[in-house]
Length: 111
Image (tube, rainbow, N blue to C red):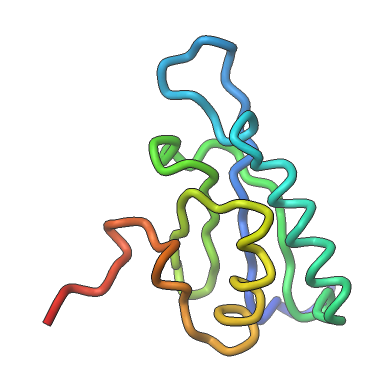
């Protein structure tokens, strides 16, 4: 059995029927975002310590493509392929969540 991953990324790739009022992450680019995470982790030599997987519905379609990073439980919304290198570098490598992509319920309270 392989050791646990340092970080585990789940990308919503859920597909709803055409015309569903909630929409779905698959049609918003979820599958492409997942592929970009896998490619970026591989390119940086992080495949053994970090994993990116497809997830079913995480019920946050209103926020666009949804990404959740564990073990922190950090939720990102509206993620696009071009955001992936930033999330990998800033959050997965450096440990600093990318504030501009955090879902509203995940942002730090204003002080």
